[in-house]
Amino acid sequence: MKLPSTLLARTNAVLGVSAAAIALTSIAALAVFVILPIEDRSAHDAAGLMMLAAQTWVELPQEARHFFEIELLAEHDLVITADVRALPAAGGGSLVAQLLGAKLSQRLGEPVRLMESDDLLWANVPMGGYLLQVGVSPERQDVQPVYVGIVIVLVGAAIVATASALTVRRVARPLSDAAQAVEAFRGAESFAPLPEQGPAELVTLAASFNAMARDVSELLSNRTTLLAGISHDLRTPLTRMRFALELLPDDAPREVVERIERNLTAMDELISDALRFARGAGEAPQRVDFRAYLEDVLSSIDDSLRIDWRGEPPGRIAIAPGAFQRVLANLVNNAQQHGGGARVRVNCGAELVVHVLDDGPGIPARERDKVFRPFYRLDTSRDRATGGSGLGLAIVHQLCKAHGWRVSLGPAESGGTDACIAVR
Image (cartoon, rainbow, N blue to C red; front, side, top):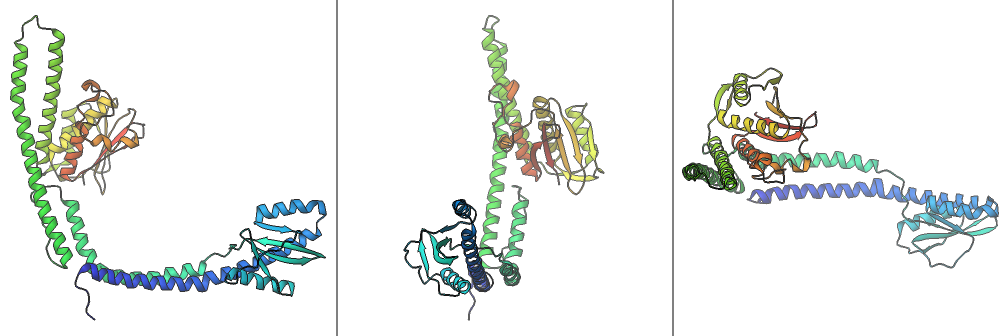
Protein backbone atom coordinates (compact mmCIF):
# COMPACT_ATOMS: atom_id res chain seq x y z
CA MET A 1 0.00 0.00 0.00
CA LYS A 2 1.45 3.36 -1.06
CA LEU A 3 1.74 6.01 1.65
CA PRO A 4 0.32 9.50 1.02
CA SER A 5 2.86 11.92 -0.44
CA THR A 6 2.00 15.09 1.49
CA LEU A 7 2.83 15.80 5.11
CA LEU A 8 -0.78 16.70 5.87
CA ALA A 9 -2.15 13.44 4.50
CA ARG A 10 0.46 11.35 6.30
CA THR A 11 -0.10 13.12 9.60
CA ASN A 12 -3.86 12.78 9.26
CA ALA A 13 -3.51 9.07 8.52
CA VAL A 14 -1.31 8.40 11.56
CA LEU A 15 -3.41 10.48 13.93
CA GLY A 16 -6.64 9.08 12.50
CA VAL A 17 -5.61 5.49 13.14
CA SER A 18 -4.42 6.46 16.63
CA ALA A 19 -7.64 8.29 17.41
CA ALA A 20 -9.73 5.34 16.20
CA ALA A 21 -7.73 2.93 18.35
CA ILE A 22 -8.12 5.16 21.41
CA ALA A 23 -11.86 5.53 20.78
CA LEU A 24 -12.40 1.78 20.44
CA THR A 25 -10.39 1.12 23.57
CA SER A 26 -12.31 3.76 25.48
CA ILE A 27 -15.69 2.41 24.36
CA ALA A 28 -14.78 -1.13 25.31
CA ALA A 29 -13.41 -0.03 28.68
CA LEU A 30 -16.45 2.13 29.41
CA ALA A 31 -18.83 -0.71 28.57
CA VAL A 32 -17.01 -3.34 30.61
CA PHE A 33 -15.77 -1.39 33.62
CA VAL A 34 -18.20 1.54 33.94
CA ILE A 35 -21.58 1.31 32.23
CA LEU A 36 -22.55 -2.22 33.20
CA PRO A 37 -21.29 -1.99 36.82
CA ILE A 38 -22.95 1.40 37.27
CA GLU A 39 -26.27 0.17 35.92
CA ASP A 40 -26.19 -2.95 38.05
CA ARG A 41 -25.15 -1.12 41.19
CA SER A 42 -27.65 1.63 40.58
CA ALA A 43 -30.48 -0.86 40.20
CA HIS A 44 -29.35 -2.70 43.34
CA ASP A 45 -29.24 0.50 45.40
CA ALA A 46 -32.54 1.77 44.02
CA ALA A 47 -34.30 -1.51 44.84
CA GLY A 48 -32.85 -1.50 48.35
CA LEU A 49 -33.90 2.11 48.93
CA MET A 50 -37.44 1.42 47.70
CA MET A 51 -37.80 -1.57 50.02
CA LEU A 52 -36.35 0.30 52.99
CA ALA A 53 -38.61 3.29 52.34
CA ALA A 54 -41.68 1.05 52.17
CA GLN A 55 -40.74 -0.77 55.36
CA THR A 56 -40.08 2.50 57.22
CA TRP A 57 -43.34 4.02 55.97
CA VAL A 58 -45.29 1.03 57.34
CA GLU A 59 -43.58 1.21 60.76
CA LEU A 60 -44.14 4.96 61.20
CA PRO A 61 -47.22 6.38 62.93
CA GLN A 62 -49.81 7.64 60.50
CA GLU A 63 -49.26 11.30 61.45
CA ALA A 64 -45.53 11.04 60.65
CA ARG A 65 -45.87 9.38 57.24
CA HIS A 66 -46.62 12.60 55.40
CA PHE A 67 -43.41 14.22 56.65
CA PHE A 68 -41.48 11.08 55.79
CA GLU A 69 -42.81 11.20 52.23
CA ILE A 70 -41.71 14.85 51.90
CA GLU A 71 -38.22 14.05 53.21
CA LEU A 72 -37.83 11.14 50.76
CA LEU A 73 -38.80 13.38 47.88
CA ALA A 74 -36.45 16.20 48.91
CA GLU A 75 -33.43 14.14 49.94
CA HIS A 76 -33.58 11.05 47.72
CA ASP A 77 -35.80 12.02 44.78
CA LEU A 78 -38.07 9.11 45.74
CA VAL A 79 -41.88 9.12 45.92
CA ILE A 80 -43.92 6.74 48.10
CA THR A 81 -47.68 6.67 48.42
CA ALA A 82 -50.47 4.37 49.49
CA ASP A 83 -52.67 5.79 46.71
CA VAL A 84 -52.05 3.10 44.09
CA ARG A 85 -52.70 4.28 40.54
CA ALA A 86 -53.04 2.35 37.31
CA LEU A 87 -49.93 3.31 35.36
CA PRO A 88 -48.62 2.18 31.97
CA ALA A 89 -45.94 -0.49 31.94
CA ALA A 90 -42.34 0.62 31.54
CA GLY A 91 -40.72 0.13 28.15
CA GLY A 92 -38.87 -3.14 27.83
CA GLY A 93 -35.88 -1.60 26.04
CA SER A 94 -34.49 0.19 29.12
CA LEU A 95 -31.57 -1.63 30.73
CA VAL A 96 -32.17 0.28 33.99
CA ALA A 97 -35.81 -0.87 34.11
CA GLN A 98 -34.84 -4.47 33.42
CA LEU A 99 -32.17 -4.49 36.15
CA LEU A 100 -34.41 -2.70 38.66
CA GLY A 101 -37.26 -5.14 38.02
CA ALA A 102 -34.90 -8.08 38.50
CA LYS A 103 -33.48 -6.67 41.77
CA LEU A 104 -36.98 -5.99 43.19
CA SER A 105 -38.14 -9.46 42.15
CA GLN A 106 -35.19 -10.97 44.02
CA ARG A 107 -36.03 -9.01 47.18
CA LEU A 108 -39.78 -9.65 47.11
CA GLY A 109 -39.59 -13.26 45.93
CA GLU A 110 -42.16 -12.67 43.21
CA PRO A 111 -42.27 -11.04 39.76
CA VAL A 112 -42.51 -7.24 39.86
CA ARG A 113 -44.15 -5.21 37.09
CA LEU A 114 -42.48 -1.85 36.62
CA MET A 115 -44.52 1.13 35.46
CA GLU A 116 -43.56 4.48 34.05
CA SER A 117 -44.98 7.96 34.78
CA ASP A 118 -43.77 11.50 35.62
CA ASP A 119 -40.19 10.61 34.52
CA LEU A 120 -40.06 7.99 37.29
CA LEU A 121 -40.09 4.22 37.41
CA TRP A 122 -42.87 2.93 39.65
CA ALA A 123 -43.37 -0.41 41.38
CA ASN A 124 -46.16 -1.76 43.58
CA VAL A 125 -44.53 -3.00 46.78
CA PRO A 126 -46.56 -5.08 49.25
CA MET A 127 -45.37 -4.37 52.77
CA GLY A 128 -46.96 -5.03 56.20
CA GLY A 129 -50.46 -5.47 54.90
CA TYR A 130 -50.26 -2.37 52.71
CA LEU A 131 -49.81 -2.09 48.97
CA LEU A 132 -47.51 0.87 48.39
CA GLN A 133 -46.56 2.50 45.14
CA VAL A 134 -42.93 3.64 45.07
CA GLY A 135 -41.39 5.80 42.34
CA VAL A 136 -37.67 6.34 41.75
CA SER A 137 -35.59 8.19 39.17
CA PRO A 138 -34.04 5.87 36.56
CA GLU A 139 -30.80 7.89 36.52
CA ARG A 140 -29.22 7.01 39.87
CA GLN A 141 -25.44 6.52 39.72
CA ASP A 142 -23.01 6.09 42.56
CA VAL A 143 -19.96 4.33 41.10
CA GLN A 144 -16.70 6.15 40.21
CA PRO A 145 -15.12 5.10 36.88
CA VAL A 146 -11.76 4.07 38.36
CA TYR A 147 -11.03 1.20 36.04
CA VAL A 148 -11.86 3.08 32.87
CA GLY A 149 -9.54 5.88 33.93
CA ILE A 150 -6.66 3.46 34.39
CA VAL A 151 -7.27 1.72 31.08
CA ILE A 152 -7.64 4.94 29.07
CA VAL A 153 -4.56 6.54 30.65
CA LEU A 154 -2.30 3.53 30.17
CA VAL A 155 -3.46 2.22 26.79
CA GLY A 156 -4.24 5.70 25.42
CA ALA A 157 -0.85 7.02 26.50
CA ALA A 158 0.92 4.14 24.79
CA ILE A 159 -0.99 4.69 21.55
CA VAL A 160 -0.48 8.45 21.57
CA ALA A 161 3.21 8.09 22.39
CA THR A 162 3.71 5.78 19.43
CA ALA A 163 1.81 8.12 17.13
CA SER A 164 3.73 11.12 18.44
CA ALA A 165 7.06 9.42 17.80
CA LEU A 166 6.07 8.95 14.16
CA THR A 167 4.81 12.51 13.84
CA VAL A 168 7.63 14.31 15.63
CA ARG A 169 10.27 13.14 13.19
CA ARG A 170 8.34 14.57 10.26
CA VAL A 171 6.77 17.67 11.74
CA ALA A 172 8.11 18.82 15.10
CA ARG A 173 11.76 19.42 14.25
CA PRO A 174 11.21 21.50 11.06
CA LEU A 175 8.35 23.39 12.70
CA SER A 176 10.49 24.02 15.78
CA ASP A 177 13.19 25.52 13.56
CA ALA A 178 10.56 27.66 11.84
CA ALA A 179 9.14 28.81 15.20
CA GLN A 180 12.60 29.81 16.43
CA ALA A 181 13.27 31.73 13.23
CA VAL A 182 9.94 33.56 13.50
CA GLU A 183 10.59 34.36 17.16
CA ALA A 184 14.07 35.68 16.41
CA PHE A 185 13.01 37.75 13.39
CA ARG A 186 12.80 41.44 14.31
CA GLY A 187 12.73 42.99 10.88
CA ALA A 188 16.51 43.15 10.44
CA GLU A 189 17.91 42.74 6.99
CA SER A 190 20.54 40.24 8.16
CA PHE A 191 18.09 37.49 9.16
CA ALA A 192 19.07 33.86 8.62
CA PRO A 193 16.71 32.33 6.02
CA LEU A 194 15.08 28.99 6.73
CA PRO A 195 16.37 25.99 4.74
CA GLU A 196 13.89 25.21 1.99
CA GLN A 197 13.92 21.42 2.22
CA GLY A 198 11.78 18.53 3.44
CA PRO A 199 8.11 17.76 2.68
CA ALA A 200 6.29 19.96 0.19
CA GLU A 201 4.34 21.86 2.86
CA LEU A 202 7.48 22.73 4.84
CA VAL A 203 9.31 23.83 1.70
CA THR A 204 6.41 26.13 0.87
CA LEU A 205 6.33 27.40 4.45
CA ALA A 206 10.06 28.13 4.51
CA ALA A 207 10.00 29.84 1.12
CA SER A 208 6.99 31.96 2.14
CA PHE A 209 8.63 32.95 5.41
CA ASN A 210 11.89 33.89 3.70
CA ALA A 211 10.04 36.01 1.14
CA MET A 212 7.91 37.63 3.85
CA ALA A 213 10.98 38.36 6.00
CA ARG A 214 12.73 40.04 3.11
CA ASP A 215 9.64 42.12 2.32
CA VAL A 216 9.12 43.11 5.96
CA SER A 217 12.78 44.04 6.39
CA GLU A 218 12.64 46.21 3.30
CA LEU A 219 9.36 47.76 4.39
CA LEU A 220 10.67 48.58 7.87
CA SER A 221 13.86 49.98 6.45
CA ASN A 222 11.92 52.20 4.04
CA ARG A 223 9.54 53.26 6.78
CA THR A 224 12.37 54.21 9.11
CA THR A 225 14.15 56.13 6.34
CA LEU A 226 10.95 57.90 5.36
CA LEU A 227 10.11 58.73 8.97
CA ALA A 228 13.58 60.10 9.62
CA GLY A 229 13.52 62.12 6.41
CA ILE A 230 10.11 63.66 7.01
CA SER A 231 10.92 64.44 10.63
CA HIS A 232 14.22 66.03 9.67
CA ASP A 233 12.70 68.09 6.85
CA LEU A 234 9.95 69.38 9.13
CA ARG A 235 12.53 71.07 11.32
CA THR A 236 13.19 73.73 8.65
CA PRO A 237 9.60 75.10 8.39
CA LEU A 238 9.30 74.94 12.17
CA THR A 239 12.42 77.05 12.50
CA ARG A 240 11.03 79.56 10.00
CA MET A 241 7.76 79.70 11.92
CA ARG A 242 9.63 80.37 15.17
CA PHE A 243 11.66 83.09 13.44
CA ALA A 244 8.48 84.68 12.05
CA LEU A 245 6.94 84.52 15.51
CA GLU A 246 9.89 86.43 16.93
CA LEU A 247 9.45 89.14 14.26
CA LEU A 248 5.85 89.84 15.19
CA PRO A 249 5.26 93.41 16.40
CA ASP A 250 5.13 94.06 20.11
CA ASP A 251 1.42 94.91 19.96
CA ALA A 252 0.52 91.40 18.66
CA PRO A 253 -2.03 89.61 20.91
CA ARG A 254 0.01 87.88 23.61
CA GLU A 255 -2.49 85.00 23.99
CA VAL A 256 -2.24 84.18 20.27
CA VAL A 257 1.56 84.24 20.39
CA GLU A 258 1.68 81.94 23.42
CA ARG A 259 -0.77 79.50 21.84
CA ILE A 260 1.32 79.34 18.66
CA GLU A 261 4.48 78.82 20.74
CA ARG A 262 2.86 75.92 22.59
CA ASN A 263 1.79 74.33 19.31
CA LEU A 264 5.26 74.72 17.85
CA THR A 265 6.79 73.16 20.97
CA ALA A 266 4.38 70.23 20.74
CA MET A 267 5.24 69.70 17.07
CA ASP A 268 8.94 69.90 17.84
CA GLU A 269 8.63 67.24 20.55
CA LEU A 270 6.68 64.95 18.24
CA ILE A 271 9.35 65.33 15.58
CA SER A 272 12.07 64.65 18.16
CA ASP A 273 10.26 61.46 19.27
CA ALA A 274 10.00 60.31 15.65
CA LEU A 275 13.69 60.96 15.03
CA ARG A 276 14.71 59.15 18.22
CA PHE A 277 12.65 56.15 17.19
CA ALA A 278 14.01 56.16 13.63
CA ARG A 279 17.62 56.25 14.87
CA GLY A 280 17.03 53.63 17.57
CA ALA A 281 15.16 51.09 15.44
CA GLY A 282 18.08 50.64 13.05
CA GLU A 283 20.92 50.74 15.58
CA ALA A 284 23.34 47.80 15.60
CA PRO A 285 24.18 46.12 18.93
CA GLN A 286 27.56 46.80 20.56
CA ARG A 287 29.37 44.98 23.34
CA VAL A 288 29.51 47.14 26.48
CA ASP A 289 30.25 46.71 30.17
CA PHE A 290 26.66 46.64 31.31
CA ARG A 291 27.15 47.94 34.85
CA ALA A 292 29.26 50.92 33.83
CA TYR A 293 27.03 51.58 30.82
CA LEU A 294 23.79 51.53 32.86
CA GLU A 295 25.18 53.75 35.60
CA ASP A 296 26.40 56.24 33.00
CA VAL A 297 23.01 56.22 31.21
CA LEU A 298 21.03 56.83 34.39
CA SER A 299 23.37 59.59 35.56
CA SER A 300 22.85 61.34 32.22
CA ILE A 301 19.07 61.10 32.72
CA ASP A 302 19.02 62.05 36.41
CA ASP A 303 22.19 62.10 38.47
CA SER A 304 20.19 61.45 41.65
CA LEU A 305 19.15 57.96 40.47
CA ARG A 306 20.80 54.98 42.13
CA ILE A 307 20.67 51.37 40.99
CA ASP A 308 19.61 48.55 43.32
CA TRP A 309 21.59 45.58 41.99
CA ARG A 310 20.06 42.19 42.82
CA GLY A 311 22.71 39.60 42.09
CA GLU A 312 26.08 39.82 40.40
CA PRO A 313 26.00 42.27 37.44
CA PRO A 314 26.97 40.72 34.10
CA GLY A 315 30.15 41.64 32.30
CA ARG A 316 30.15 42.75 28.70
CA ILE A 317 26.93 42.14 26.81
CA ALA A 318 25.70 42.98 23.30
CA ILE A 319 23.13 45.77 23.35
CA ALA A 320 22.04 48.72 21.20
CA PRO A 321 23.25 51.49 23.54
CA GLY A 322 21.40 54.43 22.01
CA ALA A 323 18.08 52.60 21.76
CA PHE A 324 18.32 51.23 25.29
CA GLN A 325 19.18 54.70 26.62
CA ARG A 326 16.07 56.10 24.95
CA VAL A 327 13.94 53.30 26.41
CA LEU A 328 15.23 53.97 29.92
CA ALA A 329 14.89 57.73 29.52
CA ASN A 330 11.26 57.43 28.46
CA LEU A 331 10.40 55.06 31.32
CA VAL A 332 12.22 57.16 33.95
CA ASN A 333 10.66 60.39 32.71
CA ASN A 334 7.25 58.74 32.67
CA ALA A 335 7.72 57.52 36.27
CA GLN A 336 8.89 60.93 37.43
CA GLN A 337 6.07 62.77 35.68
CA HIS A 338 3.19 60.48 36.61
CA GLY A 339 4.48 58.41 39.53
CA GLY A 340 6.09 61.00 41.76
CA GLY A 341 9.63 59.72 41.25
CA ALA A 342 11.58 56.79 39.84
CA ARG A 343 13.65 53.96 41.30
CA VAL A 344 15.74 51.49 39.33
CA ARG A 345 16.33 47.86 40.27
CA VAL A 346 18.24 45.30 38.23
CA ASN A 347 17.71 41.55 38.71
CA CYS A 348 20.80 39.70 37.52
CA GLY A 349 20.38 36.01 36.88
CA ALA A 350 19.52 33.68 34.04
CA GLU A 351 17.50 36.61 32.70
CA LEU A 352 18.72 40.20 33.02
CA VAL A 353 15.72 42.39 33.94
CA VAL A 354 15.76 46.14 34.55
CA HIS A 355 12.87 47.47 36.68
CA VAL A 356 11.81 51.12 36.70
CA LEU A 357 9.48 51.59 39.67
CA ASP A 358 7.40 54.47 40.95
CA ASP A 359 5.04 55.16 43.85
CA GLY A 360 2.21 56.69 41.85
CA PRO A 361 -1.40 55.56 41.47
CA GLY A 362 -0.41 52.73 39.15
CA ILE A 363 -1.93 51.63 35.84
CA PRO A 364 -5.14 49.55 35.85
CA ALA A 365 -4.62 46.00 34.58
CA ARG A 366 -7.02 46.52 31.68
CA GLU A 367 -4.98 49.52 30.47
CA ARG A 368 -1.45 48.06 30.63
CA ASP A 369 -1.43 46.80 27.06
CA LYS A 370 -3.27 49.82 25.68
CA VAL A 371 -0.74 52.37 26.94
CA PHE A 372 1.82 51.01 24.46
CA ARG A 373 -0.36 52.21 21.57
CA PRO A 374 0.70 55.44 19.86
CA PHE A 375 -1.09 58.53 21.20
CA TYR A 376 -2.99 56.52 23.81
CA ARG A 377 -2.90 58.23 27.21
CA LEU A 378 -4.61 57.47 30.50
CA ASP A 379 -5.07 61.20 31.00
CA THR A 380 -8.20 62.07 29.02
CA SER A 381 -7.12 65.68 28.59
CA ARG A 382 -4.98 66.84 25.69
CA ASP A 383 -2.82 69.08 27.82
CA ARG A 384 0.79 68.16 27.14
CA ALA A 385 1.78 69.41 30.58
CA THR A 386 -0.15 66.53 32.13
CA GLY A 387 -0.61 63.95 29.44
CA GLY A 388 2.34 64.27 27.07
CA SER A 389 2.17 63.34 23.39
CA GLY A 390 1.22 59.73 24.00
CA LEU A 391 4.28 58.48 22.09
CA GLY A 392 6.68 57.75 24.95
CA LEU A 393 5.57 54.21 25.80
CA ALA A 394 4.83 53.48 22.13
CA ILE A 395 8.45 54.28 21.29
CA VAL A 396 9.58 52.09 24.21
CA HIS A 397 7.49 49.20 22.91
CA GLN A 398 8.67 49.58 19.31
CA LEU A 399 12.34 49.86 20.23
CA CYS A 400 12.14 46.83 22.51
CA LYS A 401 10.39 44.85 19.79
CA ALA A 402 12.99 45.90 17.22
CA HIS A 403 15.91 44.77 19.40
CA GLY A 404 14.41 41.63 20.90
CA TRP A 405 13.85 42.98 24.41
CA ARG A 406 10.67 42.26 26.33
CA VAL A 407 8.86 45.12 28.05
CA SER A 408 5.89 44.79 30.40
CA LEU A 409 4.04 46.82 33.00
CA GLY A 410 2.86 45.49 36.33
CA PRO A 411 2.03 46.58 39.86
CA ALA A 412 4.93 47.63 42.10
CA GLU A 413 5.14 46.47 45.70
CA SER A 414 4.52 50.05 46.85
CA GLY A 415 1.34 50.23 44.81
CA GLY A 416 2.75 52.14 41.84
CA THR A 417 3.93 50.81 38.49
CA ASP A 418 6.76 48.39 37.76
CA ALA A 419 8.06 48.76 34.20
CA CYS A 420 10.23 45.71 33.38
CA ILE A 421 12.67 45.36 30.51
CA ALA A 422 14.03 41.86 29.98
CA VAL A 423 17.28 42.34 28.06
CA ARG A 424 18.19 38.69 27.61
